[in-house]
Image 1 (cartoon, rainbow, N blue to C red):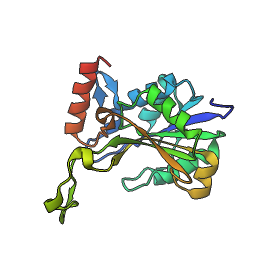
Image 2 (cartoon, rainbow, N blue to C red; image 1 turned 135 degrees about the vertical axis):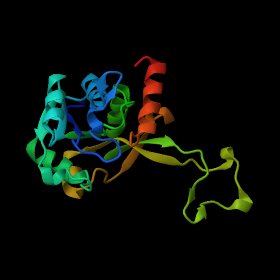
Image 3 (tube, helix red, strand yellow; image 1 turned 30 degrees about the horizontal axis):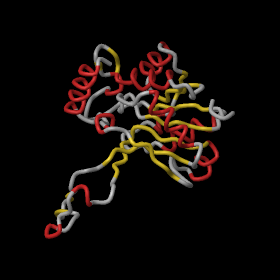
Length: 217
């Protein structure tokens, strides 16, 4: 709870995935991937209840075994092309809370202190998104997105940030009114680059394992 507001977290975790089969249960240091975001949420000083939404019994059973609450997600909200918002709204209709922290299971390097600092920022706005500083020069399929003949030094460039997908914070009222994870006045919480990794491939998975082992997580 923060300033009298009930805070729940929601971690959507499908049983299926294409890049890494059964990704949310794949082991990192002998623990399923989803273990790490659940643990971070449980350690938060502000989050009152940690919830996992899934259509998969094994994911639900494991989540419950380490202290999370679980909600069975309808299978039509757990397809490869299912957006997250309908899952968040499904959860919102079932549960009573004031503030919602939407955490991606594929961002296992997010820690409780990040969630708590994000919630403190959320006291000053309607929604919060996790970002990391973007220092690289960006190209797309059509070429550079900057002027090759006027390449700016990093220190002369405006600050730019990448939405990491690690976590989002919003209120129940904003979510239900906008049908979006972010709405109203939006602020961001900046995480270091190593915490911005979103596991989508075996290469990402290997990198996270190396980081965890180097930090003794």
